Image (cartoon, rainbow, N blue to C red):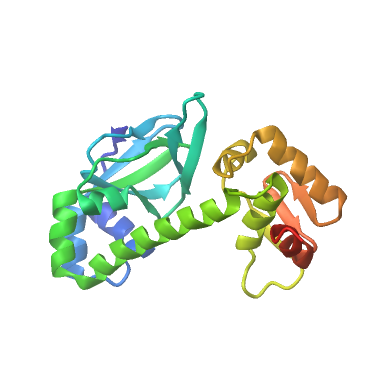
Length: 233
């Protein structure tokens, strides 16, 4: 992970553009920009490992970070795929605990990093920032709960149906599109499936006329049938 030397005005501009910091007072943004570092990280480079102290907040400016847990059979359990404008490791940071998972760059990425001491000091002064951090923790908890719902104790077909149903836009009727956030192999591990099983079930759903698959884009053609599968009916 290499610090990327840019001017303070540029750091301030990045902070002001990220939804994560929108609505903060000008004074808080100034203090955060003064303490922030812009880091460039190449694909497959670790950001941190399980057990490392959570002393830094990481926010993705561009690219994608994979948060995962190593398993006994040398496989990975994907916990989260973190994209532009999102943070990772915030729960451990807030509680002052060590990281419970590993993080690695899924793509060439730029990160904004903030020291825990500075962040918590500013959060005590700016309730909007404190609320933003709590929102980030809450979203991660909800994502983990949805992941549990998608994985257990359902069949492979039900897990994938659940995953796709959870991503149905509120305004969608029968048809909608789901863009997979990463390679199918990594989405499969997030659902506790092998890549082969994931691909096989997608083919089954496509042959049944429920979905169409074009690379990472999955077009749902029959949302209600997908919901019925999810329910195990």
